[in-house]
Amino acid sequence: MTPYSSLCDDFYVNMNLSTEMDLPANRETVLHFFERVQKKYPTMRNFYSRDRGDFILEEDKDQGSYRWCTIESRRVCSGHVNPETIDSALAQHRLVLDLAPYDLSVSPLDCEALDLLYGFDYTYRGNHNQLVTEALGVSPSFERMLDIPGSTVINHEPSLTLALDDDCRIQCRLSIENRTNAYQIRTGEYPEEQLSVYVTARQYGSLKANATFSKTLSQLEGICRDLIENYAIEHVLQPLQRTIALK
Image (cartoon, rainbow, N blue to C red; front, side):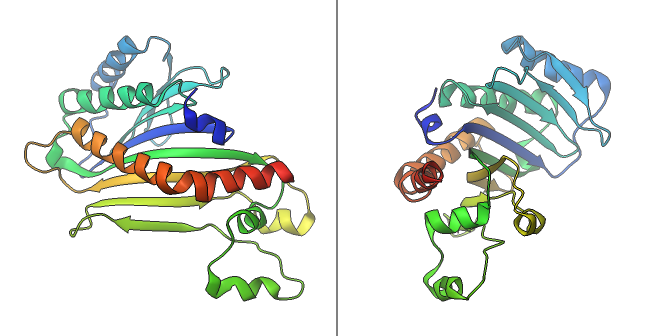
C-alpha cells in the first residue's frame, strides 16, 4: 500500500474533469469510452447507470481496493480507493484524460475545472466535531467559546483554500468533512461513520495554449504532494490518528 495508507483507514485518489458543455450520452459513445478503459483494467466490469443519467464503470468493492470511473452530464470522474501505489492511481487518471478528447470530444478549451483530490477517511463512532476540536484545536479568536458552560461542539469542519497564482486559476484546499448530526449528539447514539480529510488541487478554466490535461494533472499532483508532506501529515492527519487511538 502507499505510505499514506498507514495514516488513515481508507485512502483514495480522485480526479474530476468538469466541462462547460454537455458531454455526449449516446449509447455508442459511452460504451466505446468505457470499453477502452476496461481494456487497460479488465477487472473493471461492473457497468450501470443512475436515474439522472450518470454512467459508472467500477471494480468489485469487496476487496477493499478498487477502481471506478463515471461519465456525468458535464463531468468525467476517475477514482482509485486504497491503491497499491499513488502512481498506479495517477496512471488511471491519465488514461481517462487522454481518452476524453478523442472519445468524448472534450477540448482543453472546454475545461471548466480539473481537480485532483487525495482523500483520507477515519472510521470513528462518536462526535466527529468534538474529535476534530480536540485533535486540531480552533482558531485563537474562538477558543474562549469552548469555555461556555454546558456547551457542545456540533459543527466544526475546518477548511482553507489558497490561490497559487495572481489569476486565482490554480488553487489548493485542505478541508475536513464530518458526518455527525445534531440528532446523534442529542441522543448519544453514534453509528460508525467516516470522518474525511480532503487535500485538493484545482485548475480553473480553459487550459493554456499547448497545455494538455495530463500535464496539468502532473502540476496538480505536485501541489497536493507538497501540501500533504509539508503540512497535512504533521498538523492534521497524525493528530487525528493519535486522538482516535486514545478514545
